[in-house]
Length: 344
Image (cartoon, rainbow, N blue to C red; front, side, top):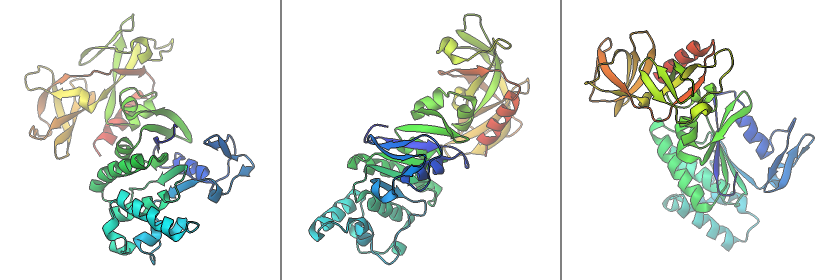
């Protein structure tokens, strides 16, 4: 990561992302590899620099604010080595940065969850760390607040020029705050990339299944590897042969990733699909649709198109980024898992 960037470790529970964060902070020893910060080695097997010497700040999941200290006193906690005028100047600057100058004398229990989160952020930023770590910082907040506060935290970190690493299992939080995202699986980062590329150019089935809503549908590539035929029609492969790491046994049999936004509801279309499930999401519905073959698809449809389960609706493809994977025996199970996850 470059200085001033915001990175994110994203993955399901148990994949190891919090362990990585704790190792960077100095709370966990390494069994292999090394950790360096700004060219300075801070961990290797058998050697772990103490957390207090690392110049690493941490915002904990529960914020860990001191209940007997005011907002200003919480922020000033790590600045005891500074002279009082410098300490107060730094606290005032951070209060203004996080928008809490009017709450400086209040105590944590008098604040909302979002305000407590900003106090914890300001306290971690106060000593001007080389790196800030955020461990599921929005998990205690209402769902409606998370994405908005993630954007606010991003603005605060960018305004302060702070390099940061976030841990979360929520892709919407990751997309809202991070410059680069590492998707983790079983203790490994399987793809480190921008949110756009994770969504449109997943490097593996796991990433494709974990990010966004989608299903895999069987297809057959043409011999030059420039297009693929599926039940809904023929699609161009914008990546050519790079779109599929083929194997000899199933060289041209592929599974095509179709996102919910690749399938468009069109009353004029002759291609029909049956609504088998629907989830109302305010601005739109997430429909699970069944083709005549029994293949399931997902589609995001504006909410004024309110169709009943069992009704057949017209659809058409509008897929600009076609991603394929070699056909595998597990692909049908994976597709079912993807569509099930999409409607929860």
